[in-house]
Image (tube, rainbow, N blue to C red; front, side, top):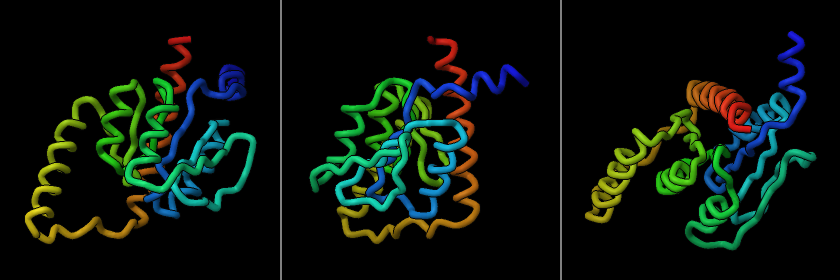
Length: 168
């Protein structure tokens, strides 16, 4: 028990970045609770002002308006081992390439083994939309999605804590 208290009393050696432009509001509370529970620094990045409670571990970064500005900023500023919450598949691929971990707001953890297939599917759907096919959008966020995200986020944070302990 003492070991647990000692390990949890130090700030993790990674940060959580949030691509906040399209983040469902219901997930902000999940992310803020994770910050408190794991003493984790969080940076919400968006091209518009965000209503996020301020704390010593929670920051917002407003970027210029424009396609992929938040994505570019996240990739530029993140470090290997950082976690990024995004539903943007190309951003997730860049995060993985840089050594980070990417999580979709519905709880999917992007990995080296699944990101190529997700990129191909995204490109295929873009091609269909470009040809005029109505592909529809994602279903509204529900309680199950929130639970899946919460579980994936906690699992990923715990893995990164263990990984960074070994590396440092």
